[in-house]
Length: 320
Image 1 (cartoon, rainbow, N blue to C red):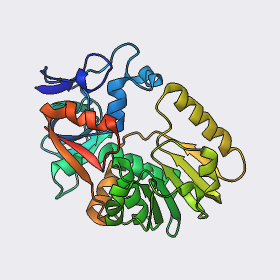
Image 2: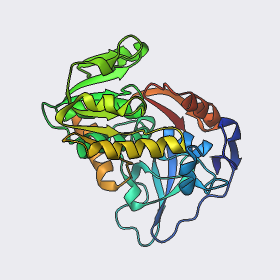
Image 3: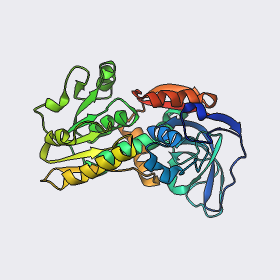
């Protein structure tokens, strides 16, 4: 099978499309024929090995797993003897590893049945970004009907899902984005938009029930000031260097102990129940993936280059 591989940490130039052995499944594993995947910031971090603290997971000196990709939409072609929830022929989506390939092995808890009536490319854009947004809105910020929410970084993959899910939960959403993304924010339901190129949202007199920060920069004290007394700041991104990540997480934890305002950071993890909840939002609440651009498997390096440059609008998809 064909797969997008890298043998050492670096930039997009390390990626090569190679013929490799189709993976063999264990008794509790599932083999999926991958139809599409999508690019996440986590893929860029995996490729570059930065921040270096992440190498405790990815590999200290070289990558533990040589195939990139964390999102998948595809069809099950084989199941292990201990698998009970899925069968061959099921169309599924999920978050795993080594998904920039024609086939990948997953476990039952990493996938769910795919939303009906949605093209593979859109389905593939859902898992990591959608789960992160759902966890941020529902579990961390605990958004309720009538809440006022500030989304910092509303136009990216996680951001476009966050704005929509917060609206579905009944919130009034203010989105921070650049000038060129204002129309996009209007189209997905943002109630108010702050163009960070022309306006400084940190000087606002507004006070929010929750701030969901997908950018991970700026003064935490300033962000905290924008919260109501019972508000919560949720950090989806916390920095780009090891010391930056550790330092920001420590500051978030420290500030959370001062007064009634909460400051949180979290990492989302895949599970079938939340994937099912995400599917329900697509099928019943009109949650829509925003696709910026699609690439073929042979163009993964270019897709990753664009991800590394930042400022993506919605999701970048890989057709396999």
